[in-house]
Image 1: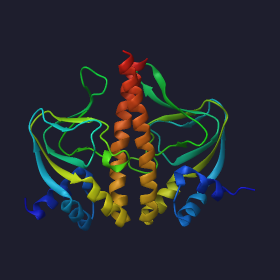
Image 2: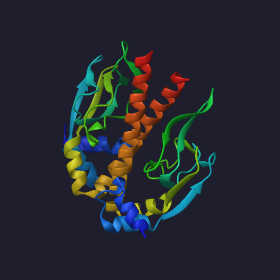
Image 3: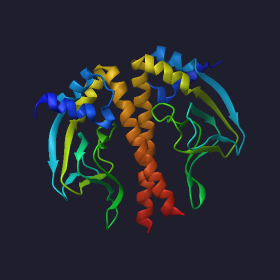
Length: 152
Length: 152
């Protein structure tokens, strides 16, 4: 049977991460399931987890005063969901809702954050990786915005 | 400018408050003092990214220019804000254009040199990345808010 640690270390996101760090993360991970329609986290709430989606689909949404929640991105199998647990102010900037039945690994970010605060080697590795996820999200949003402008 | 003075100014900068003296000194070694006139382009979308700018005085417009007749200003940055982080991730090219709206006095931080220091010293890397990750997150948020505002 494939071990949790094996699955995590094979994921591109954890590529080249030293084994002790993988072990630390593995110790903070559990299996979770969401039903279609479930809210995984809400904008503004304290951010304490991140998710590695194994199956299903999740919509990332922001709240618009005028139009309510609007989807900005849909994530699926293999995607990393949630980065706000890692740096101040540790609050979600977006909401996440399962739009299909979803299986994921949930990592206790609060526990990892405390470990990162004590072990900056781990902290640096995590920050570089999650900052890169944020940067990829930025690039995707930027291109989306440019496409909208191009069509106008 | 005297190194000690530069260090003092950095220390008082919102982004670096609470940072250890030895790290401030490291940053000072990677910094130079720069000045821009109103209308100056500080950097241009798509060009190779090498620096971050810590604004001491003045206003800077962060703009999206591609595909548009008129540049779109995503946000205006001012004293205490940081402009530029694209040297952190491949392809190391600016995601936005930064334009001085007034006389701007800033510190220019050499990204490559900072990156090298962070790779050597993960304590510094951890402290810095925690701060830069927030900046990138702030930009994603602004882009997303704008995107949903114009799309629907």
